[in-house]
Image 1 (cartoon, rainbow, N blue to C red):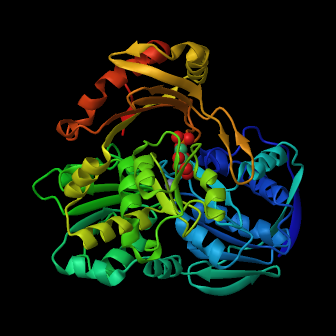
Image 2: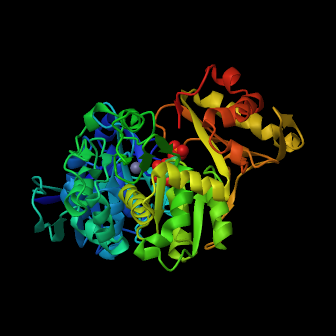
Length: 543
Ligand code: G6P
Ligand code: ZN
């Protein structure tokens, strides 16, 4: 066993995006790519010497290899301890929990979230800070700066560490604690929720289907829904994590989880269905005959959070990302609590959660969570819904109908144009920016623009600013269009168009979203010239 120093040179494009550095797996496997990035993390956090880290990932192709390299690099640079999930597996929320529980200095999560995995697909590395949340921009900027200057890194030359059973081991003086990835997480869920009342719900014959999409939540979902809560065996499907996720996109939305949507729309529909993504932080919620949009799910959870023991005292405040619908705002208003609007990216919730200003937060991109960890949490969201179903004994469809009756309905849809030429996408956004001063007062298909701007955020806790966070066109009837370029794509640019309209008229609450949004969709194309600038006839993905 020998500590060696390897000479290297900077590699272009190692700028962490919304959620870590994602790249093609082969790129990650190329000489020095992973090592340069990891060494740059050490630099950005002021060195890893004497520190304790958490390490794990979603089990995708290269997860095991990358974990070995990171352990050897941490040991070579003097880390005191690494707490690693058995077989290098940890869901993102479980990793966030471990960082917090063990008071670690941070953690490294190996995942490209909902992007496909495999040698020809995607890999990713994300650094989470000591609060358990994604590194703030200050740190990701420092990582990027370090990737541009790196000249060498340290690593231990040794054989693989056996990560297949739990327990303690060591490497060159660094402790390695191999933990059951599921146990601490389940214990936390038992504190937050009333497992007994959920168990009672299943005893009534309540049926559920959870699609783990061959990704990391399988073991968590089986342990909780089937073993603890008594859901029928087989309620959790695609429950074994596979390196290529069964060649699917582990993205819980109506496109990639279509079989589950088809099931709830069929005569065999269970009472409740849900899915999670590659690393377990996203969720999709379905009921018999109904798909719940993430924005509605967030609002319903906020309105009913007091039904779960951990939130019985009420919420300190709530937060949503800017493109998420304002259904949450209406609930916050009724509860008399603050509702914060942040840029896209879970990291922006961190300060609000740490400061106790928000208890619950969520995003249109299928993320919902609370202050129990500093990441969104798919299984937690499912337990929240099960709690609402157990306490109200209503169907998912009735819960939504009642919610809309009380608060009005924000119809919502997101149109994604994927793999668009980068320059075309930048031109489209520039074109929009130029129109901003002149849009107010103009009408499109019966909707009049009240205000148009480019969203920027001033963090009320630390005063940091984030600019250029999406272009908003707001109409005087509560409708809104947001244009934004994705920060997580790996090929070309992805244009996201977020469409929203609002009604409180009882006779309009049960429309097809397509009907309610058709004018707004047409307005978006008129304003941005999407068809003309991208050459596309329609979106690749609609959620
Ligand atoms: C990741 C982050 C989310 C964020 C999403 C946005 O999933 O964890 O917090 O909402 O990316 O992705 P986008 O592709 O729209 O930048
Ligand atoms: Zn994810």
